[in-house]
Amino acid sequence: SKAILLEEGKVTKSGDTSKIVLSYFDRIAKKSKKKHSVIGDTSCRLVEAKITDKNKEKIISPLLTDEVHIVMTYEILQKTADRYVPNFHVHTAEGQYVCCVSAPDIKPMKPGHYQATCIFPPYLLNEGAYYIGVAVTSHPLDEQRYTIIFWEKEILSFNIVDPKIPTLSNYGYVGKVPGVIRPRLTWQIKEVK
Image 1 (spheres, rainbow, N blue to C red):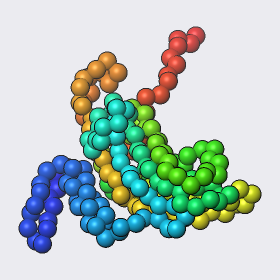
Image 2: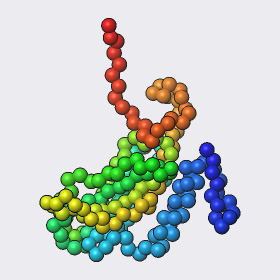
Image 3: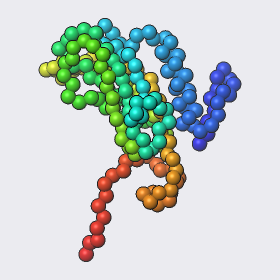
Image 4: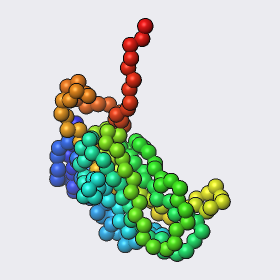
């Protein structure tokens, strides 16, 4: 499908819907960065968030066949017994929540800079635009509660591209495949009598 981007009533872009939506959110993110000098509080702050490939190069349009690395650098500013847990919130361009992923097995950490990377394997997300919210939540060791230190919604965006190459695994089909996810699962097929 096609879309246009209007700015002050004038068409500034036209083309594939997912690319136009990404362009729109990129503009919002840039304006947001100008407004906020610090994201976080006196205990922890966001330093950087980015989307990269497996070679640590920034990307905006990975192929369906590529790994996608979501990376957040944050700084813990004070000593605490709480666990500061990085997490990513993934949405489609249509606003559907795809998933919320949190780093496992976090222990209390001393003040300093930390980098959290979550790797989405090839063939997990289907083609289309995705938006990432980045957050850090504070969790006391022996309690079932948490505090949101920061949560920047839709601060990152990327567009998964299907290379549309006929292969044996897709039996030559190069059309749009429905669904948010598109994993390559293990199949077992055997003759039964």
